[in-house]
Image 1 (cartoon, one colour):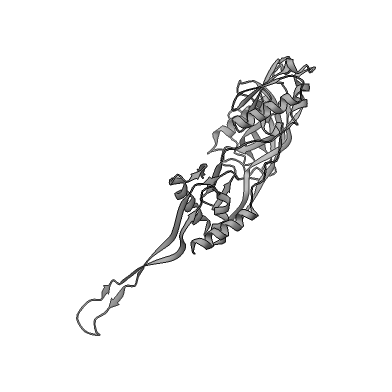
Image 2 (cartoon, helix red, strand yellow):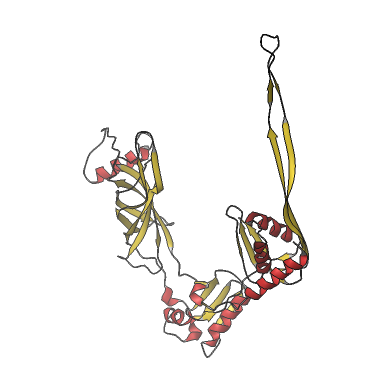
Length: 369
């Protein structure tokens, strides 16, 4: 396609896709409050009640060991006994202890098989203590598992949908110990930006200070804003956070382009810009075809059958984008829209963007997955 036609398409795309200002975002969606975080828990337990889809105890001896320990704690002596049930499975139980969780609060748990069990569908998790990184028990889990898949089959074939060896128990754990954190005694609190940026941190500082009659927030770096709880003259840190967490701030972000080669997905921000550059793209297709020919001697004549190789090779150049010039300051969204209008395949478009980035004309972080 001629240069003028390509630029005309880009001009139309610019009219239809002119960038707009970013929408203000709540402060609670932009930052993490120091100390207000969840804690990971993990436990090792046993699932019973499976319909013959449990662990093969010969291949998973740890299942027999935990089953023996549980039965002995319940007063059943199985020392020296040999039992090979197929309705039990050893599992790992994981959960996330929410911040400010109190004793008796419920929370969800995830159960995953660690042996050769085929499915946890219909199983029941036996009382399992959940430990944190310090080794202490903070919760206890028990309940019926909701598996994330199903397996069906016969003698010659089996079909599986989803992941039947993993499931969840909604509200399946009860908090037994609280995390020792004196949040009410804090005199200052740091706000950690989820995406560090000096401009965004500065805007957060200005927005918080505008809600008080004195400076209470100070930007420490691109990822941290410190809030002086004492200067807010609020009754507690909780009151201070409740006042500022819904403040609207317009975040700033770096120009970034993310491409996924497997799916051909391209995601970009509106601030991505391209310097003056020329683009030309085309495809070469190489075809090689073997057509061997067998030559046989005449009937009753001496000789052997000979196979004569015959190869057909050719190179075809498919039509692509002719030499097109992109002007200074053109946004990447305009270029991609123009390439889409020209019928360029997503994978070819990714190759073009890679080449533009390699030439130094694409001014953005280029992430390839």
